[in-house]
Image 1 (cartoon, rainbow, N blue to C red):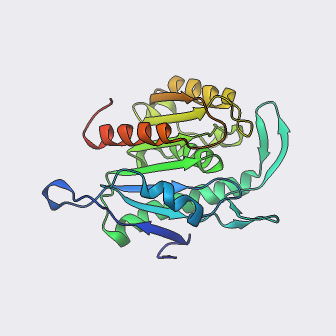
Image 2 (tube, rainbow, N blue to C red):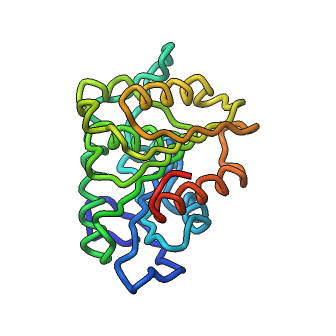
Length: 226
């Protein structure tokens, strides 16, 4: 695993050249709770080949298997309670990785995108809501806005116009679809430019979701919403 920054990670080099020979855009892809960078690399390899894709591994080894970004507690009506300190530590680690990876690998610091699944999607939204200026766009698959991040959230005028794609399975038993719809509503109230899609799927990333994510990423790289 490469590790110029604090988080060890895997790398997928661009497979398509950038017009004019410029620096490639950066896409950081975050795994879910109990996953790891190796398990998510095949997804990163299916995403738009113009990106330099970085797949970090969460800092927290879990007792049963895999890695996490922060510990989860009891279930509540708004989702499982999260370890707030751990969440913010991982949020700051991702912000450092965005900067360090762009510098280390020669990616374009003005075109930095964050993508995540499950807990990785929730963490991506934490970064988006607290430091929206650091991102050119966010993809959250099967994620949610966790209440614990809201006291640190940026003012709505800073979030306004941020491109966000939310993708969620309607039968998701892990992060129910209500969380995806609530995230959509919250981000729209903040003024983000939200694209929202639902799929006939559970807690998974079906091929049609990948196709839609790639279409959205292409639209953002090419200068506008689809």
